[in-house]
Image 1 (tube, rainbow, N blue to C red):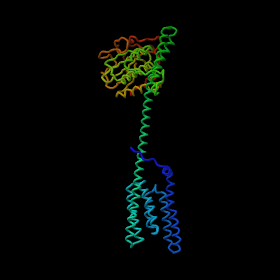
Image 2 (image 1 turned 30 degrees about the horizontal axis):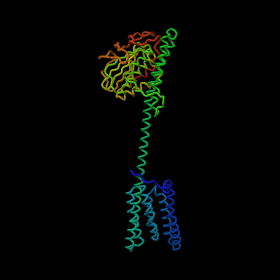
Image 3 (image 1 turned 60 degrees about the horizontal axis):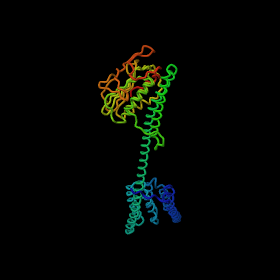
Image 4 (image 1 turned 90 degrees about the vertical axis):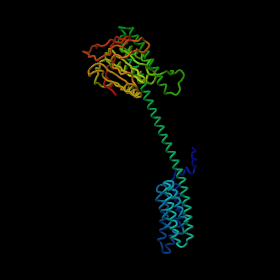
Length: 469
């Protein structure tokens, strides 16, 4: 598109100071016509006809005021200029058409072409009527003046319409550009907010999981450093390994905030998926959580869906490690379907903090609900049994889920993911009631689970906030 030529210095100056230009136009008319009106007033006073002199003087002042405000009230200015063509004397008719030219230009530019053409016809009729009043018998003068008025006023109207259309076209382009700029800024802000939320979810998943495991291992190492030094050393080694993995994941997540990677930075790697669940579960087992893992079906190839499954399991096990008191079994069950999955995480821990104020932020469950919503699913979290019983269950349905199964044994063949040998699933932990503050009885922990010589860490003070969405 060919852009219009930018205005020059003089035009730009008057565009910035429109009142100065209007004052110059009004003054250019008022000064000569005012002198003429004063001379005519003196002559009329001498001749004894002061009405004609005062009419010329007041008419000149009214036209000057109308020209000064022609941008704001163009219709009133056109009416004043048309009236002045009749009121003012016949000797000044050649100057009386000039205000009408500026009035028609203002109408075409600042109002509309239709109103400009209407007042063009009114101006021509008024000019012809003024000629008839001052020269009623001179037909040639009447016809000649009418043609001259029509030609001059039509030219003024056409010039005004041309400049008015150009002005409106440029203003429409500027408005469109401003609208596009606002939409661009809004899209950029929405994209930035979405990216911040995504990074916040990733950092929460990394930090919450890693710190929870580190705290559990550190507490266990401190509790067993005297009576079981070997177990304490193993807990310290696990703590260091977990911290290193968390640091690597943190650097990788924060690396997306920079445009270019510097030398020596952490290399990029795929996001975790279903194949990484075995290592994740082993880290929780090392922290003292008796996790049992079963899976059915073939995982979908979608990496985003696999990442969501991984994060759901990670968040559910992290909350179980933090808040479940004396859990004897934590079952993780994943049923894969053609384009989705169902994730069930069930523990049988006590909940002594039910009804107490939550110490957590609730960001974890919000994050996995948002992840599940991307796949058209949902997340429910709440007590596994009747009020007052043991257990907490987190269930996530992602996309087109696999066969619906409860927390009990699988109805089809099950395999344990991960590098270790497959283990047969144990019966799901049912609601177990605690008879006292001592350890509750329940199912035997899964094979390979590490049972530390210290009590399970944390209390479940956030359980009541983990309600279903």
